[in-house]
Amino acid sequence: MKRRAVEHDPRGKRKYPSRRAGLAGGSVAEQIRDLRRRLAPDPGKPISQQRFGDLMGVAWSTVARWEGGSKPDARVAAKLARLRRALDALGKLIMPEDRLLFFEQHHPLLLKMRPIDLLDTEDGTAAVMRLIEGLESGAFS
Image (cartoon, rainbow, N blue to C red; front, side, top):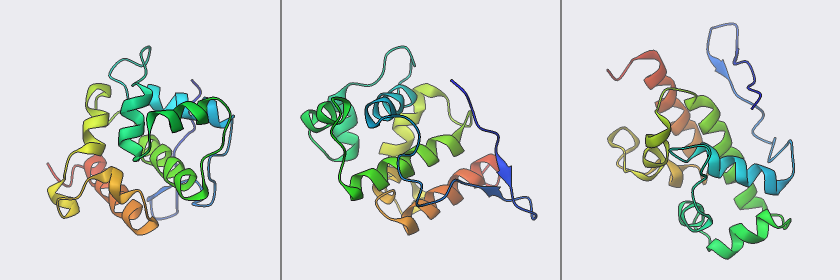
């Protein structure tokens, strides 16, 4: 898989893709399968459609429809794009076997909220990104 270089602004802060980028690049089906792979402990065995649906708050049959070519509604498409951005930012900070757990567990630095729930909004996503940047800089060690 081809990885993009991380860009930084003049102050050294990481820059992320446009918030309006949506699910740019590749078909929706490919992107969903890619997210399922990236959340799996073993990239060769993506998490199930059921598990991914539970994470996203939709039925497994909805995930199957997306992988069959249907497009998610705008709200879910935005959340999928935010999940991709968060996974890009995580990079290798969290071992593959712990990535899904990172998004599902209530986090004390996020007011005991789950990162996946915060990805519903841009403000919540900004909080998750700040947490990831803090992990990267070692601010929480």
